[in-house]
Length: 121
Image 1 (cartoon, one colour):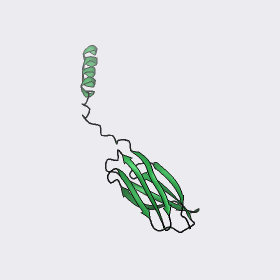
Image 2 (spheres, rainbow, N blue to C red):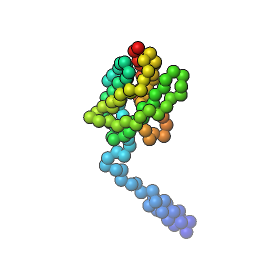
Image 3 (cartoon, rainbow, N blue to C red):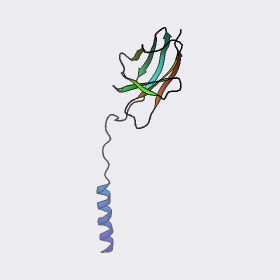
Image 4 (cartoon, helix red, strand yellow):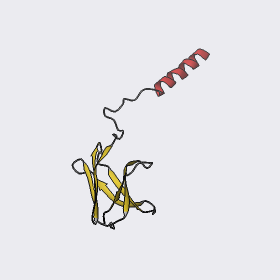
């Protein structure tokens, strides 16, 4: 009797632990590769561009910092033809600005690039 009970429990356990077929394609997010193409400060504007691969339609956030101010959300950007480009026309000659690029929607902040530029007088 005892052997029959153990055999029945073992059979139930094995039935409950059947494997589930893995999906044929990965559902994980692909790694994003970002490399700065340019960060150019000209009189009255800063132009920024990054080459991006593996973005899968994700959005990016550009943050800006001036002097000792805290970082502020500046723009939400998307990849177009493998690049993110942005022109900041709200700069003051002689000031330094820092920019950070990150992926939106991740549980933790992941900054992909940070650059500092000084606007000429």
